[in-house]
Length: 125
Ligand code: AMP
Image 1 (cartoon, rainbow, N blue to C red):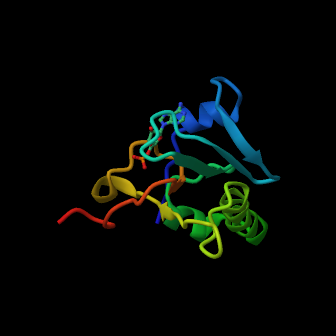
Image 2: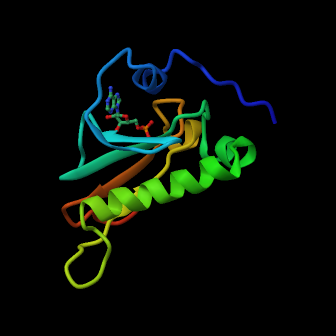
């Protein structure tokens, strides 16, 4: 499988510092920032710094260090907003769109971290 990365996509520009972002946290291999059009009170996008188009691209080609860093960075976002379900955390949804069927708008892997309200059913219908 050949994965073609478009280095002019908007998240590539954010990673190069060409356009601003509202950073939530940064790690060695990962950046998390607030979504520009939030669909919930918490709506954070978590992206690897490496040039990966989709989840399957990332899982196939990223190093173990990148994958571990990415998973832990998502947990850090959950922790930062105190979302872990338990005594007071209200929970969250992680969402990754891939390609046409997933209606992925930006062709750089991103995980949406959503919370702050009851999010409804996972899929309509
Ligand atoms: P997706 O449909 O999964 O590809 O989601 C793309 C997300 O990127 C949408 O939720 C957009 O609101 C968000 N987005 C697009 N441009 C920016 C930007 N410059 N800064 C932050 N979020 C953005």
